[in-house]
Image 1 (cartoon, rainbow, N blue to C red):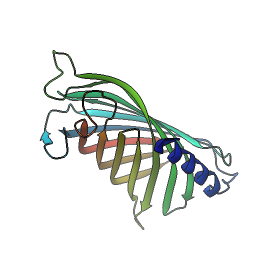
Image 2 (spheres, helix red, strand yellow):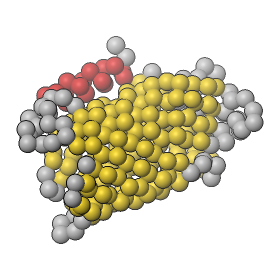
Image 3 (cartoon, helix red, strand yellow):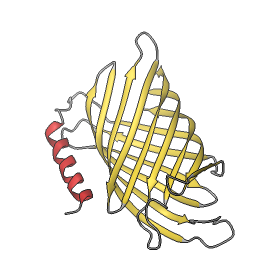
Amino acid sequence: MNKLSLTAVVASAALVLAVPAHSTEKEFTTKVEIDAWFPDAKVGSKDDAVRKNDVDASQAFSIAFEHPFAYVPNVKVRYTPVRSDRFEYDQIDYTGYYKLLDTNGLQFDVGLTLTQFANGEFNKGGSITGGRADQSFSETAMNMYADASLHIPDTHFHIFGQYDFGSGSGTRTMDGQAGVKYIFPVDAVDLEIKVGYRVMDHEFGYFDDFDSNQANVMVDGWFGGLSFDF
């Protein structure tokens, strides 16, 4: 059993043992999020990586479904396309998670994310635009998932953070974000406006002719978005 499989098994067991009983009063909810992201990128080994402003402005779309059934995970799907001169991929995150804490002041979720890298292209030395990439890839990775939100008392502001991390078979993936959101309490729907910073830091171990240190991709930048919870 490799490191990634062992991590997934241990994490799954820990989640099942840690999950508290869900309240039977909780209703079904759906949350839709739309973000505009304005990142830069670093490509290559950590020793010689150079920051470049060559990443197209991106969007992230996600939808989550929550329910009142104990021990059945809630589900979220997030899609983020990333486009650059030297690399591109569509990142699709499939997350199953539990709400370990859900109070008026604090919310904390944990779970597992299956991350799919689709339509991937990577060029170690130059641009893939108008030419042929060194490598194409379509792979998946298993990550630990955590999401937290802290209410600032006597305001409608919340501090939030979300983190996915996994490592195995020569590949390491990390996707994290943090920021502030403002929630408008409206009848039948909660509207959120948020601003934050997002970082993707991936070392792809999928390629035959160079190692994951050479295929290190960091994409980071500010984002703003809206979400609807109904």
